[in-house]
Length: 153
Image (cartoon, rainbow, N blue to C red):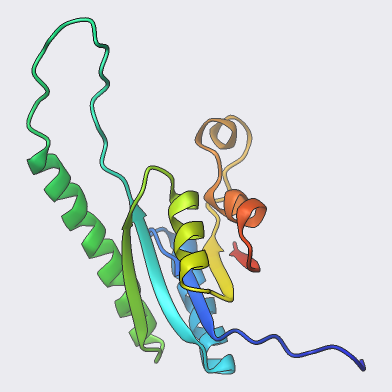
């Protein structure tokens, strides 16, 4: 096929949340990084849950520092596991822990800022009501990313 260029994936981002499908994304990301001599970065997005504020009563807001620290520590563990999996597949990977209200927004902003050439993400295969309520990170990435997105099932 004349005229087709081989894609250049200098930097591959793998979105990793610790799920079975994100493990598959790590495996495929590592395979692509090896084939194209790409830099691989594993990204984990977490959010800190804030209590709702009604503004009705002047109740004191509970101490959130402890909950925030626990959330961040768990997120660090998930990210470390993703990097460890990449290394088990023979790929040296960088890692980025992102705090964001939306996983899609956090990944897209990071990918744009870092000039990522490909995003690899797993899908949990949600259907019906669950997908409607929870949304889909992989669908959001496909819809909003400026670079190609490869969804692994």
